[in-house]
Each structure stands twice: as structure tokens, then as C-alpha cells.
Image 1 (cartoon, one colour):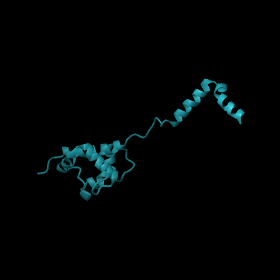
Image 2 (tube, rainbow, N blue to C red):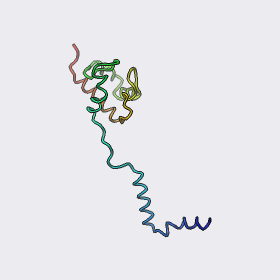
Image 3 (tube, rainbow, N blue to C red):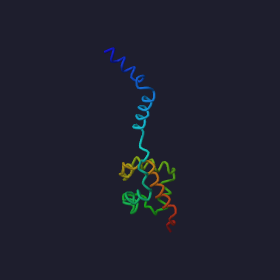
Image 4 (cartoon, rainbow, N blue to C red):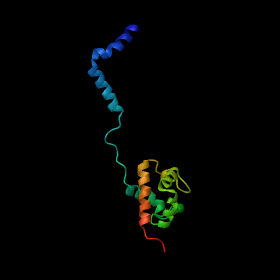
Length: 125
């Protein structure tokens, strides 16, 4: 048993420092995320694939994308608070709008997209 332990301890010396370094580098590279990750989906794509279902018509009291007054009122505590509430879910809206696969950035961008559309819409008369 002692002989096996000694041999294992001496293995790095027998292999040479470059082999050990190469093994360490390979292990680090294997653990690192791939350089080619999936890019974030665009805000427009997220809104049109999911959010439009409720925010297009005002279903379940969701602020309509073109409703400047409603979005302005909801964002009165700040857009970050609005995003956090939507991520957690509130009123009739499920957490993350029912899309657990969206990243925080994708979700935030979709909300900013809808907010920007709303505030650029003409005010109601």
C-alpha cells in the first residue's frame, strides 16, 4: 500500500512538469463554459412569442403594449421594481410570464421593449 502511495506521489515528477501542466490546462478548459453560447433572444422575439398573448389585448389586466398611461403608472416605482415584480409574478401574471427559460437579461429587455413602445404611443384622449 505504501509503495502505491509513493508511486502516485512521484507520478508528477516522472511525467515532467509540462505533462502535469497540460493535464491541469485540459481540466480547466473542460470545466469552462463553451465560448460559443447561445445568444440572447431579441426583445422583439420574446415579446412576439410570449408577452403579446396578454399584453397585446390586456388579458388578465395586463398593461397593453400601446397603453402609455398604464405602463407609466406601473413603472412609477422604477423599471427595476417593475422587472423584479414580473420575474417573481404578480396579479394574474405567472413568474417570468410563464417562460422559465428566459434569462434575466432577455426578460428585462422584453419589459423595456414594451415600456418603450407604450411611452412612445400617443396619449389617450
